[in-house]
Length: 293
Image (cartoon, rainbow, N blue to C red; front, side, top):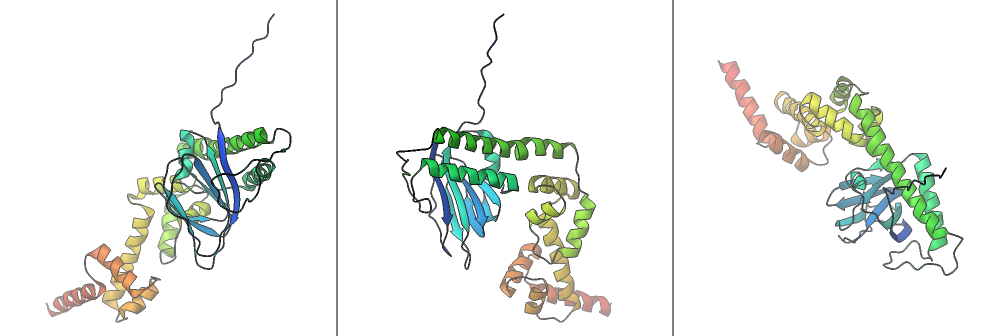
């Protein structure tokens, strides 16, 4: 009897690697808006990095990862008084599953971070320094550890497959079958804390879910996004303060924790169509007419 050999398929294949970097960016450092013909993995080991791309615009915090697809314009910048340490790996892998990570920041678990650190170590077996300076041509070592290039390829493929399994399939399937959090609990939390700076990542963490499921289930249940819900609460509270108190506009702006009175004024105009002063005058006129009648 002859044995049958089954050929193994490859779903995620890393064909080429451009660079394996570990940077400590300087304060207020920024890159130009650029693109290249390979994907780019960005992981923040410490600090916070601001990422702007065609698919994402926001903060990448400690322990979080994002992957830019090939030929996607993107740029990085650091905040004042912040010097983040950042891992950047450029690689060629044409897989639609990776697109999930182009517009989602993912908080890595400790095992994932350990795996990423091993990739960095193996990358140094393959490439020559410098590892902390941008380069368009990382040179390979003449003498490398046995099969180091293949190990680097396998490690990166395994890492990417693990991410896809956790965040695109298994977790998604579990979340699609049932909602493990209560929408009423979330609205109660927002009703109590709407004056604070509420972040989706924090909400997702508190209610043991992920950003995508949180936003989807909230909008399906409440009929509006979390941001719209919070802005609605702020607007109603601002209206109350404007009509029922004599507080100055700048004091009300401070009570609602806006960065400045101008920011508060823009917010009220966007949500009511008139300035805070006009709204107050309009409210006072209605009260006067009501009392007069």
